[in-house]
Image (cartoon, rainbow over all chains, first blue to last red):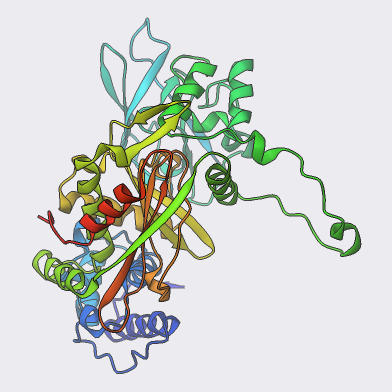
Length: 98
Length: 368
């Protein structure tokens, strides 16, 4: 199912849940991660888990994240990812999949 | 419905073209007249345009492939889910993949390849094309691998099912058999200050604003510097000669679900640290998505493997075919001390040379 409205609350919730699930695979409890917390410094995800998160974002939101976009500014927090997605999706006119 | 886009003729006298660039990828929508690829002959290069709008279903050649004029360059569909005829993917003569000669067919079988893997230098794929391809990538014949094995008696007693190996499993089988049959492996290791490396990586990550921890990439990059200083590390034995490779192609293991890939950063010795990390990151992403191309997993001249992610504190990796050194990185202990190991081919390197390499690797230098 797709819709053409970017629901920020739902997107941040989905991202947060994905991070928690990826962290859980490494036996790390990331439930306390807030949307503004630095994901890198939280230790929730190692590099491979980050690649999993990036792949999930690409598939879920139907976009391609360029290598040059793999920065703290774009993907450093749940909030930053949501902003990055909103910007990218509005630019590409793609829809947010749910 | 899938519709082919054919390779255009560039010059009257040239029956083949070389693929310079592929500008689209499967799943991508293209408009009529949109650029999809760039091809060249010795006399000219041209941009190939889609003759109608659609979705790219499959791109048959790779960059640098020499393909026949009139062969299928790519397939377009009305939807991204249109099916490409199976026979095309498998490789049909005249449909984007050059028809191999009889000798080429024999060579392909010898190395477990198909015609689609190997670029042809002319209209037909020749044995010489295959030999050049396998030589450049250090591929090993698979006769020993595929020789029919005697079935153990237990198979007649305990019911079971036989499974054909996947291409990745066959690659791994070739790798371990090469080490058993040709290399003379040794192993050395040392303790080092892993915490210092962690700090250096964290500093690099902060400075470059990277989202992914670059620790392993930085150690692997450092290995390329060490290999440049000592070309013996990127050598192998052929007959009674030592073959020194002209490039540092860094093999880097990536575990994606149950598949272990050896991704290869080509000519890594010529890259800056930032370029190396970017290339390796891109390969890791493709490995995680199982989207690596053949040339991205072949031709390693030295390698690096880490099992730190699983808190493995020591492992002895198997040498990729025709390499002399693979470095083993493991999880550090609680006191910040780590273990760096190296499996090496004793026909090429002494234990001291392997030790010297990982000793140099234990110091975080040359990271600019």
